[in-house]
Length: 145
Length: 396
Image 1 (cartoon, rainbow over the protein chains, first blue to last red):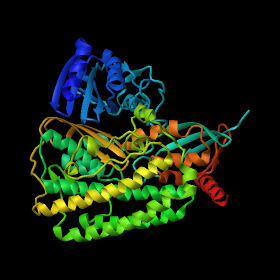
Image 2: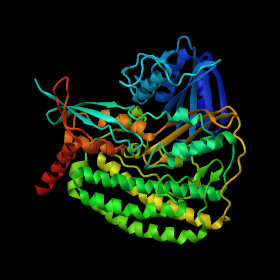
Image 3: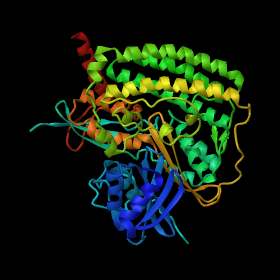
Image 4: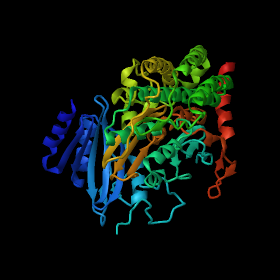
């Protein structure tokens, strides 16, 4: 399956959940999706398309909390990024850790650094801030004036 | 009621990239649960990088890991060059790959030595670390440093490897190859090492996919992923080499993969040196004046697996967001699969098998948990347990 086929597949299967697809090159692409559809699309990508989960990147921008879930197809060297934007007032999204253990740590880390809530996380304990950080302080949040 | 013993491994020895604390909860000899704590040395490097210029960030990311210090600049360079859309000169590609592969050799040797030490085979430890020295000397000759070589920059490399140095590098590698034959033989043919490592700390293919594990840890379980082959960068597409895999997923398979990978690394370096001769001396970089707005995802195959960097640029001279994922971040999580159900003496080598931060295990206090009164074992006791098991096997 080549890059175009993978992107087309996701577009066809999830239609209105896919907001935008941007193919930067043959090996890099971003798919913007609705936050509510993450679990279904990630499940399809991971289990049906056999994409490897690399890691997720959170970022605090003027649009809200943006998360990029980086997946890889190692047969063709493709990195597909699933992109969601969460509102600052209610940064909540489904956890992927029940589906793949590889997402367990990074979701806990994103929670501690940005205060994003991952719903139904199997192990919602502190990962990096155990015992030595102040409660309710999220160091990677930005101040937009 | 069976009394549970808590064995902490770590955390106060931030020599390697990830100071960490493992808590092994044991019933008798058997590990029943494992927990992991980190954050002891959280340096906020991602955010620090966003306050530095791209040029400065190279030096910063080089200091994430003390052993494989080139792997982070490698991935960072790939990410930034993807944003710029620049193709670096062939000479720079060869030099990057040479540095990357020399680093793989010295990192794998370091692991083999420590694995030997954990098993009570200090001869292996002495050999491996002795053979590692000439490689570090080569680094010193090329870059002026035994570690943290500061070779990479956007658009190429900072220093050339002059053609006059090529014979010395070749000679050192030839000598090393013979030593590596000895070392590989000593490890692969030893019945006691077989007894201690085969069937121990097994990770199945499904475990690897589930935990998103990478590098030799994944390849030892039959998952043939290697960024150098899958998403080729630097000089890797210009040379011939093969991805080493094993099937069983145990500690022995991981050792096998690393030992055989060193031969591939030697072959890659030799081919790159030949490639260098064909390129003009001094053509080591393309001048990059500014980094445009955009994003780049760069990855590189470090000795421990895929290093991943995501860089978001807003057109200024520093990254707007810089996400870094080191391979141990995903590999360490596999301990939940590889250690539970094993004896403590086998857990020692299973913990070491993915090549995480070993130094941590050496610095521990003998203590009793103040709340529960459970006995806490120390690192030396742990290593002694593992070494004793090997001696018992030897004497049988």
